[in-house]
Amino acid sequence: MAKKTVLFVCQSCGAESPRWMGRCPNCGEWNTLVEETIAPISKNPRTWVAKSKPLPLTEVDNSAEERFNTGIPELDRVLGGGMVPGCLGLIGGDPGIGKSTLLLQVASGVAKNEKKVLYVTGEESLAQLKLRALRLDAVEERLIVVSEADTDVICEIIREENPTLVIIDSIQTMFVEGISSPPGSVGQVRESTGRFLQISKGSGISILLVGHVTKGGNLAGPKILEHAVDFVLYFEGEMHTSFRIIRSVKNRFGSTNEFGIFEMSGKGLIPVPNPSQFLLSQRPEQSSGSVVVPYMEGTRPLLVEVQALVAPAAFGGNPRRQSTGVDHQRFSMILAVLEKRQGYPLQSQDVFINIAGGLKLQEPALDLGMAIAVASSVSNVSIDPLCAVLGEVGLAGEIRGVRGIEQRLNELNRLGFEKCIIPKSNVSGNEPIDVIGVSTIQEALKLTVKRKG
Image (cartoon, one colour):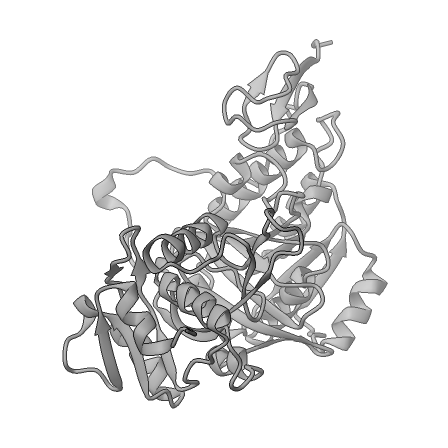
């Protein structure tokens, strides 16, 4: 009998170590090494794997594969135009965010187009799955369901049924009989993903895996899980709101900068066709500390409301700095520029900033919006509701140019905005609305905020 090997595997990067350490020597993360018992894997032949034949590169057929729609236009756009046959994808998100709901709607949408779909659940009974399908009106004859967690059994079912799309919910519940570690461990996730990868590439069947998320917000399991798949989607949103975002962080068949917006309802996830109007629908009127910024997510412009609140610090010399939806380091830099370059007395003030709607944004074009929102709250002066701002702020107080200015201004014009303050370097003279070019933060503040005194 072959001897079992005990290794410690990092759940963050997949690095292996013969002994436990508090900090991973490869990625530097703390408390991520987990004990794994590596047992010999069964040598039974995998009859479900299609044999490949080596070919000269000149003889490889490079004709474009015809994608098929998921039945959800927002998801198709994020994927780059639909699902590619033979792809292996991963979708992750917090528990209860709506991953299973979305994928059941996808399964129903594909089945409606006369394509066979296999939905494998390792977390629910078939009765529970049927109840959810009835609520979502997702019951289709060509949608086949099975409750199973054995990876080899699932692969055999895939070989027999030969569906167009397979959904595995979730990869953390799958196990391979020859591995002694429990389901969800690094070894089980790695081996199960490898087998699904082989069957998808060998037979041209598209497979979607559901992945759980750790406390840190990353996909659970080794990084090899993300490296092995063709695309990775993150499902985001606050549990107490109906707002959901699906974001692409890896895509071999399309852009990684796209995202889709959904609204959770009793009938499932409903795509939001006009997200800018949806985000600004509850914007308060004549309120200080509120400004609109045209944000770019990939190739899609989106109007977001940046909110700021400045109030006297409750504990004297220990003011609070709290940001929601923006990078905290960049937020701190904007406050330092306002204090040093414009003389705003923020050292004794609590400062809060928020992106309305629960979005998490990273683009530098938000800098000027954050600065003006904070200055507006300090001066208690409201910003013109039909005026938007955008621009990157440097440490010297200069306003730097941004990309995609034409798409941003067209989106503002479509929603009825009359003017926009933009970096002077982005002014071309052919803008669809009135624009005011500024080169410093001082110029922008003079146009929008009148300071007291």
